[in-house]
Length: 449
Image 1: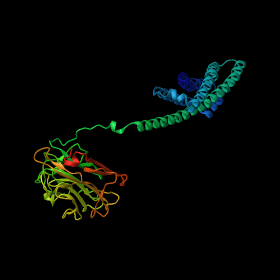
Image 2: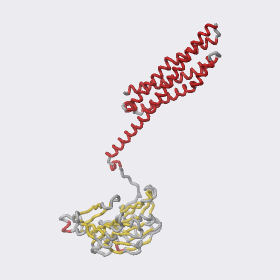
Image 3: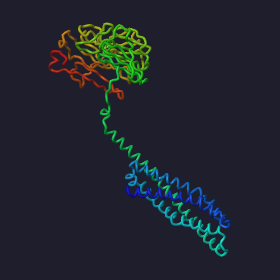
Image 4: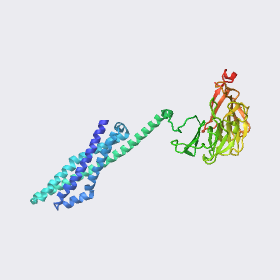
């Protein structure tokens, strides 16, 4: 098949060259020679003008050469095998056959007749005797008809060949494009996207644990990040540059950030490391910004010391829930799940167990803000590493009345020591829980392994 393609391509190029040569011969040699004889000039010129041969022939030849170059490019792109194995490839073969016929007509009919016409025209220009002039004139008329018929046949077969090849070429390219697209889609479906993802450090370049991060759905270039004793930083260029926003506040330990989905200028921040571990930094409660971090206002919950998570109502920026861990080294009552409906001016404790049980996580159902999920974690750190304790009588809770009353979720869940939860954005009925569960060891001693 590939050899057939090369042969047809060669014929196509030669066919174009012959056409151009025939047009050049007609325009620059044949017509002047005929013009020298007044007897033949009217008939010949009329035939040439009627068919516009002196324009069509060289133009068609040039276009055919371009088509041959195009075929050369297609072959060099590696499409020859597939090209010839398709229906359009067979159409191309038909077009190539027509091109061969047109070539034969030009080579064996039109060009010889044109050459002989030129010779006869030169003989007539020499003013031969009357009987010889009559014979030459009759021969010239016969050759003119032969040349015209051969050229007309070559033009018709050539136009058919060019049309068939062009249609076949573009249909074939369309089929090949669809096949390549389908193969790419099929290959993509077999590729694990996570294997193509690579982590890289984008900053900010400073020491400390990165505790919380928040994006702005309406501003995909904007991100906030906080650190345990490193303050809050913002990037507005997809993480290329970061700028501190919290350096003038009395605490630099931040455990939670939440940008109001309904108003990206409103940011809530919970201070304290937000995690329980032997070495940490405590904070002094909740903060709020109404100008995207330019200025800050302290709200309350100062004695909570450690805030793990903040969730803002998707439609109401004044309604939010706070998961407060509380004092990491001793009992205190300002811990659990808090709710505010006035933008943080006041907080109400809505889920609480005892002075050792912390609020670890809280999420609002995006489809129904009255449904709220939260987790509690009974724990206490010691000043001596490894001497802390925790209990298994905690778990995941759900409220269906906006956080006023709560029910513990136990169906399908083991004894939970600590849990973090997430709601699937595409289906709020799907809830994920990452849980540390009770074992025979920690269910008795309460030590979190």
